[in-house]
Length: 99
Image (cartoon, rainbow, N blue to C red; front, side):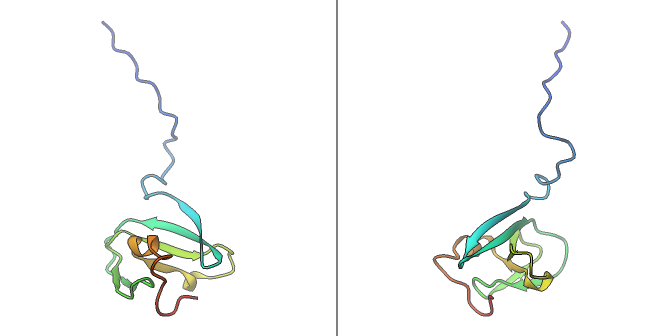
């Protein structure tokens, strides 16, 4: 008996957003709109300070990058957050210099 062809998926082969952990999304916080992008851990040996907990955040760890959605800022306005700290931002406001 001949084999059936499998149905084609609707997703395009050129879509890399699912590979990169999703695209950017816009969220509200502190009276403003923010672009949030989820990042997977990378091999880059760099660290950041999370505004939510003031702890070191390694680029090797999965985390989110947040910047103003108004488009008026530059690369210096991006902040790297632990994913859990960003999720808890309403219950535990950021410390230090955040806008």
